[in-house]
Length: 220
Image 1: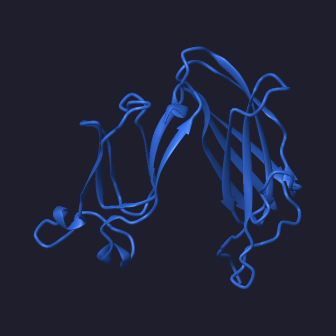
Image 2: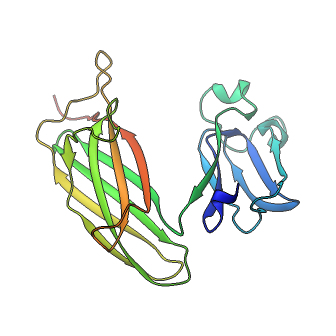
Image 3: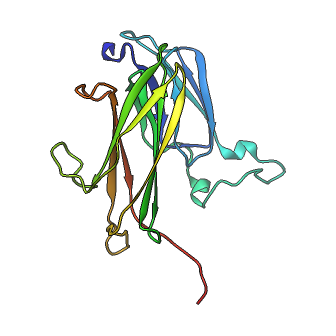
């Protein structure tokens, strides 16, 4: 649609079993191996904004890679035996020229700590400076107007054209509500990207679901 003009356009596949070749308007956009992991492909230079587009996905079963009755890779659990093709959601995503490319949350129950790794990409032709704001909400209450359960220090990032930078934030969290089978509690990290100007609207936003759970092995 015309609303995607001047944006970066991505295809995101949550899972395709096993090998995927993606073609847009007769040109190969990319490939992916593995039936359980999501992948994204930037198709900005291949699409026709405001006009019809053709998307073709070629999928190869893992059985095509079998040699002398053996598969030369691990396919995960037994689910790999019965799943083929596109078996999770597919998304068409439009992002601004400067956007949040990843947000990874690492929690530590032992240290009562949370670590964020926030990546920002500048796909524009000019240098830019932006600001990252991050807040944690209850998973069922991330709507506008909700009160966050935790906030983080703002981070400013300077980016050259085509550059991606990752910002790491570590902060204590004394009493998080832990995930447990009887109480599978989850949080949502909402990351917003703003221009350097304090009074501007956000350029991009990303929600990341996570929980506090940890397994350790130690002496009796």
